[in-house]
Image (tube, rainbow, N blue to C red; front, side, top):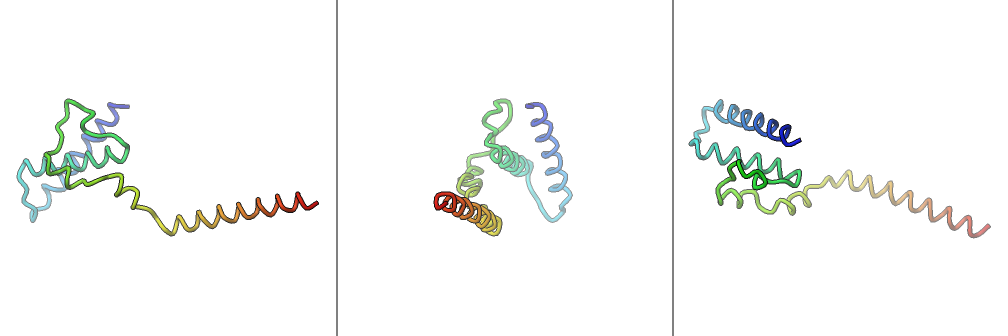
Length: 109
């Protein structure tokens, strides 16, 4: 599992580097590229409730990067699809009403 995760991260790093380097309008130092790549990896890991800090042999982004990430839990909590939630509410509410009506009908008989 760990090897698969590390291989996935390595391929992600390569893709980021290629896409950034191919953009001729964007000028980044190697250190900036390094930190931006680490940010993206950290974001990926945090989405799975993991962190680069768990991998002692891997570098961690500079301190200012932590400010860029913000509080991931708050961002994740606020990132929801209201339409999907409304549909889910209607389905659950309808089921609940059906159960209540069935219960009432059984108690009245």
